[in-house]
Image 1 (cartoon, rainbow, N blue to C red):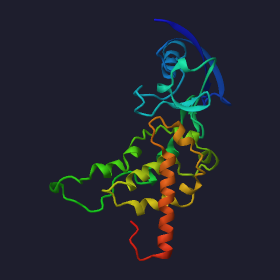
Image 2 (tube, rainbow, N blue to C red):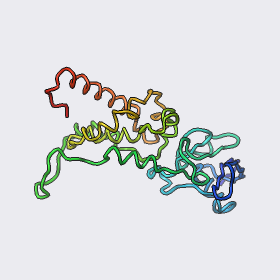
Image 3 (cartoon, rainbow, N blue to C red):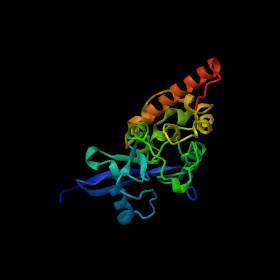
Image 4 (spheres, rainbow, N blue to C red):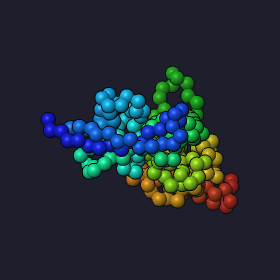
Length: 248
């Protein structure tokens, strides 16, 4: 099996011992089919066991291995070394505090997910013996694309608004809220609307579209945000011109 040597320049930071982050370079013999995560695992197992980073599935399913690779938000398990020339710079995801090395603090992201009530709130309560809440294939199609999010947070690292306005609830959380708002079985849109359409909600989005460009699962959060804007605008006009209508 042919091998080549790649140079990884990895950000290192241990808040217990380091005054500031710094970069450390590693020479890694790699195989043709390796991704950046394989190179990091090689470093961890054979060169420097102190290197810290997150990963789990190695299949672009868990979303754990999001990091900046040559200044772009990427999943390390989907970034093939053969696609890079020269030194490969690896850093933690932008816009998040660094816990250690490539590990970021994701508390803000998790809190924002909770705020949008990311679960079905049934329109009508139904006894278990009455069976499932059914929907047609057409009803499923309305929101299926937005179910594909793996919470990798690449969209937050790419979003300039989240970088400028940390209180911005962000693309993934708004897309998740939109997923449930579009679900024919759900009746919780009014409960989510204050979070996603008020201050620091969807109207902070300047529609740069970077969130959709970096999404590894092609969720297209930028489209979700624009759909939320349209629906919220319709809400405003209905409230001010026809307040007697049911807008749910």
